[in-house]
Length: 64
Image (tube, rainbow, N blue to C red; front, side, top):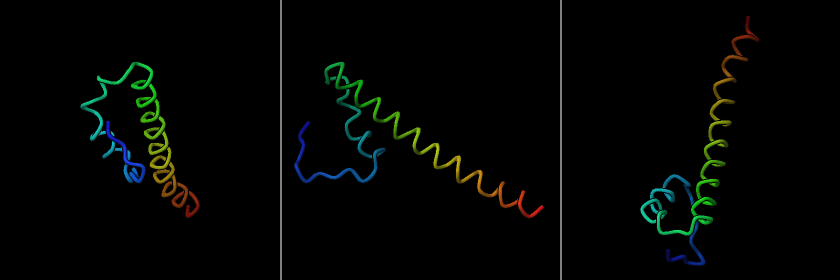
């Protein structure tokens, strides 16, 4: 994988799609590291969405 020093990842999903076809070429430890990182991003995104879903419920509960 070519890596430019100035590359910036703006969206982890787009970056994953870019590197996914070459994941099988990586050594096991490197592939595992990529997948663990993706898992961390997924959990972070899920937590943000869950919090956003809880907010309207709190507002409704406060209004009642």
